[in-house]
Length: 423
Ligand code: UD1
Image (cartoon, rainbow, N blue to C red; front, side):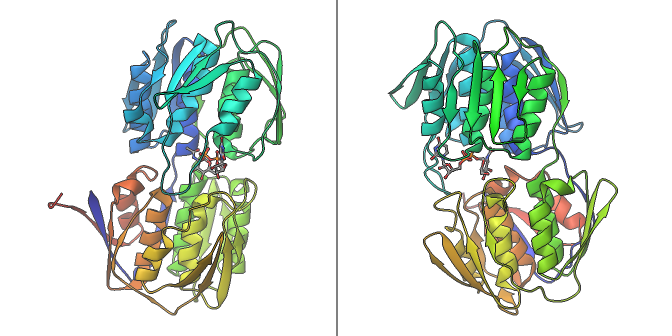
């Protein structure tokens, strides 16, 4: 497992260009399964999760070409697809479960390994399964697999999600586009990545109304055609650089990003005392003084994204005052707080609330990245800590941030990557 050595004290300055969103690209790749032929996706980030999804699609019978330097993926899908997503891949990336809907609707069968628990909560798949059952699928759980069958195809249905789950909305949307009749997904998630997926599905020939709202109405069509699509920019990577710039009293211009996807985050940065201005194709974040604490409540989009919660905890750890951070999306997403405390942060958690009392400074120490976003939050904390912070298990961060170390260095951070010889 690689380690990142972060020397505290640098200001982040310069320009950071963001690529397409991981959380969109993985689903766009799965959506390619819906149409025989070659679908091409651009602005693909060079990250491990994309590689895992490519492996999964290959195993299902698709041919996947990946030009990493150009950021282009080409998925060539045969008429006849396999239908088994094995545990060795699903275990490594929970988002693999998003092939369930497309496979079932296209082939009438899907065997997808059950994703296990992970470091940020139990993350069930019950909404995915219940929705597909409403659409006429027979689903059982056998030997660690979700075994789904719909030999005569899926049928449109009205589905109400108990919670606007991103993955369930995507799986059901992809299932519905080739189902017979009309499907209504109510209380749907409306993250920008879902809007991006819906746009790609529409250009493939799908009929979807209500895109960007919490009610999606899908009229199933007979077949779809492959397309070329540019993935939506990664608002979480952009938000990470924005928070990092503000925390380090830096000055970073973030390009290839849409301000409207980060409105609440930028608003919080302004409340904390940073200056944010829109520039061509993105925004610029600057800060000169110590930030003020800001209360944050994570919620489905357009609320504050749970994926930026660790970064805002890092920000509050060195801000002036006390803040309450409330996590409403994932039950275990405060696990990394113990690592923040190792850096000297003053944080108390109680259930889904964390009270963060800002300290003038943190103190560098060895810590462990428990997941992608926790890892990025710890690195930001390391940037404002005295001395050296060594973040172990840094490969988690690579799953979500292309060229993380290089980007940080380009912004002026003193960061080195170490391969752990002991392991
Ligand atoms: C996606 C994102 C992740 C982000 C999250 C919330 C990807 C690859 N990942 O994850 O980065 O943090 O959205 O914005 O896009 N739930 C159930 N049953 C279900 C489905 C979900 O109980 O069938 C619960 C989960 O346990 C969780 C909550 O719903 O507490 C939200 O999960 P969901 O929106 O589905 O997140 P993901 O799609 O897994």
